[in-house]
Image 1 (cartoon, each protein chain N blue to C red):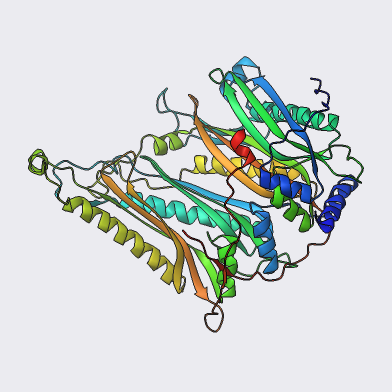
Image 2 (cartoon, each protein chain N blue to C red):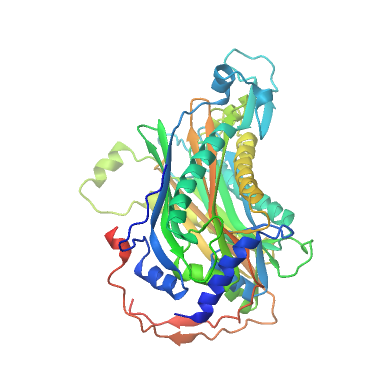
Length: 277
Length: 293
């Protein structure tokens, strides 16, 4: 039993009788205590939980493919809708960050949903500011989906996040004719048109993401997340959506991080009280 | 509801062995597993039904409302002449009262055990009997610490074990569990209806279209979604009084009803209070853990 810890706990519980300090601005954050401590160690503190959302209509018929089409069809309306939703949602998140006097948003959780009629993109994260920072944030706030741990490592290595960048590709694979289906019965063969559709969707999405990163003079994109596969409501449509954090070097050169090797000596826990609930 | 008197037997707790060990290490003695619940009749009613059934109209609505007028004039009897986003304060009040009753019972059981607080709180919300009844249940482990006067109201927290200890070491005292809900109803205007259900037609994306493409933001839905998220954060923030909401999670769901979508936003987290200056940690050392797999 640590006497110091017990004393801290006693002091904490005793302080509850004094009531809150109403002069302080209430802070909300979705960070864990580890993340808060880590952030504080790097000279930042959380200021507010911020969100941004955009819902964009996709025209009726976008996912309907005419019968007899021989080659993959790129669905530009779906791609445009998702791009607009991503852009507007991120902009709203940034505005909320500015309103909270934050210099950036970390640990952004991105949710993407594409149904038959609309594309929805939702962002939730915590706005942060340097400790003791004035009211006004300098410049455009950065937005990153990196966890606090990754954000801290990135900063220590001399890099800084700029913004979230995204790309998407929606390609409809042509409906196979009866003759083609019959010719494939009993054979395990590659389906070149579907393969090609997936390839096109991926290329378009990655191109779009990289173009967006280049436009903001980023050196690269890290922690790229990918959502791919057939759309739930239109199984013939191959979707590929990617997003990540565009970064740039702010130090003179990359700062090498030399991690120490650690060998945990604790055994696996074979029993937990929760198992007898 | 009268809390059960403390029994002179072994205590019970919902803590894992790790959390239990950490809890003792910080001087917190488990006293017992405590619970509180409240079940209410859950009747879904909308703005239109409340206008007719309860005798209040749009002017009597409280909270957030936004009206959307039809730009087309009279088209047909089926054409929507207006749209409305409105805060369903009656749902929020019912939920808040149910939660408060469950928490009162939890705290009452804890106080009967002589607890300073309740840690490792778990909250559940359950719809019974085809959504006709709704229950909020809270459970946790009542704890006490020697040498400290009992607070007027025991503290509550979702945290336990090392997470709670780290919070205290960082200079924050657990105050309360914070939960808040907001519900926003959407009665779609003709434009919104057009964007979400009908509208421009484009076959195969680039095979030409009838009526043109309509890739634009659905403003009414965006504003309703944004309002639900903003209102729920404002609700919780208004109860903090200078404290901090830590480890918050925001979940949003959309329920389809005959009238239109209802957007429910729920936020939960730990209300904590700074009791000493935040001591900055030394920059952490990066390590690579050697593990078998």
